[in-house]
Length: 342
Image 1 (cartoon, rainbow, N blue to C red):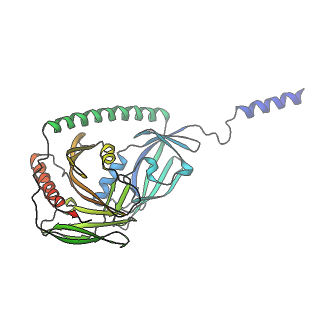
Image 2 (image 1 turned 135 degrees about the vertical axis):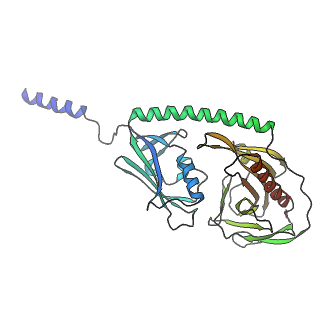
């Protein structure tokens, strides 16, 4: 009888223990982003990393599943976690992830930053484990904040619609000349008529851009990037010709529909002009992020994007908008006079 009693006691104890492999839920939030060697971020890299950090990632871990609630709801399996795209970070393909590891009360996502010329590239997105109560409060506060941001952006868009920030001039017809550029494999020439006052040179800068699912960059596969050289040099705000032999299709209408931050003031065939609204989280207000012009052409297997994006400066005053308009109209005039010769 004693033997049966002991066996029942052991059985009850075993059943009361949590099953091996059945982890309790744990709660995590982003803590910081830093270089592996703790070197400071240089130039625009700091702003890009701050933008990534501002997405304020929060997730619940259960076994091998990570259930994110901020910045939006999605799940992934840590064993299959290979790319930052799985974090819904779809505009940073130059970040090459190589490891994701739990280390005590920290979760580390490690990636190489290929968007910098700095020798310090290895970067860590570091999460820390927090209590359930702190996590739930953070999520509730963030969701309320996101709601307020959305309302402010909507009101700002309505204000801009009443007082358009862009004054688009008619494009003057310019004298042109023949120019030849190439696809990334030099399989064929791409002949263009371009304004006599410009030249096209393959870029020596580190540049990256995404058009729908087509990713183009100076160090990306299937890519070739041409700078527009002119006596007037506006640097990175100047018109650029992006060429890609990516097999993906490009649909301008879908590109427009998917860009909730984009407001068009002109659309004609495969050409659009408009502006983008973004949010300055430091100042806690919506801002005019950029003014842009885009012309899309397709030649054989190559996509051509003739694109100029005039980003705003730190100020949002009339003089800044005037300067942005000046550069936008400069880019637009050149773009309208760049013609693909079939």
